[in-house]
Length: 473
Ligand SMILES: Cc1ncc(COP(=O)(O)O)c(C=O)c1O
Image (tube, rainbow, N blue to C red):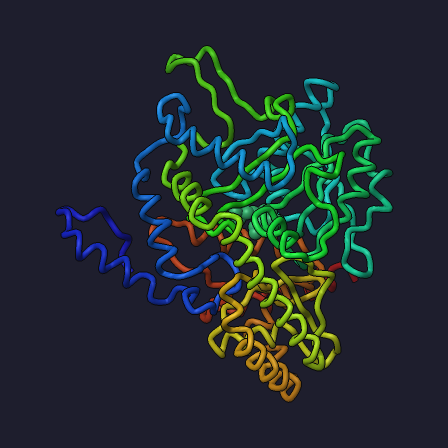
């Protein structure tokens, strides 16, 4: 394919819009609930409503809160509504961000800067569970804060017996998740809060997944452990609106217990020739459309709407848990208590990555987790409509894999298995970096982990591994 250039002549709008429709041809089929991540879809009517709210403010810019008072109003109201849901207390405050990752990045920046300013910490570390979302590892790298990991115990829960020892005078924050991404387990937040408070270290709760669904599950009578600002040691939380808030993409919150904490997040530069500048988070220009969509969707759904969505999600999750437990050879990983779960193989005859390939052959989009290996599902209210079909395809996939052990050594199963288990982790990193960067060449395209013209990625990794072993004797 030639590298695209800007068309010399502008093109008719209808033709351009038709192209856009056409581009989506091979995208995951989220409208029929075939996808178990990335999209939180209700129906076309909901999408149209969110899009029309977005459209009204698509050009508006939240960069300067004094300019678009409308956007500042929406942001303040959204912050207040979610502070209320998460029990932030009378001094709760926060900022609308463009997504969960931005919210997590901001928390790390805030606590790094706070520790530097108030305690003179110059070699910061933070204590985070091994199951923390990868955004926290990104934040660690971006902001120069060393992550100290809390490992998983045998039940795949965060082992907090080590938390107290991991904290030292350079610890700028502790993290818990509600729930964590890999298995959907809610960390032992009450116990973490107690230790963090005693050691006077801030505790952030990553509720990017749970923030807009756990409160409604609790209202529906689901028994959940303490996980929000009601735990005294919790100083801040992140909560995504564009996940279980069912708003358009580009909306999340970073919330603090008080302004003294939030102040360390702010950026102010008074000597810029462009003018005195203040910014609350990572972005400069901030998308007004995402604010409007978030505000509008929250008004439209209200507590009742969210409770109904949470109830349907709980039903879907419970149906999946029961159905998966009933398939011989599978087991649920960890202790999922919210809207997401993972499952893996319960016996050695089953390669879960081969099961994933079989599900994909049956038209499902599958997300994989590793160590332990598993299949991951972010369950939404609409998945209740497809759990029966999914479980039936899953049972069939497991039977196919059991009958043909070769399936574990071919296709995606071989690639993902090798990437998860080859001991040379630096080599996996370097290889993925190469392949991934290649996608960003101007006009670059798809991710080809398995280039057919060369030995496959697992073959190349295995060859390098064998070579390395040989050199080490
Ligand atoms: C627990 C958790 N935190 C943070 C994030 C990052 O959110 P985003 O993808 O909106 O940047 C995710 C995304 O799945 C998540 O599950």
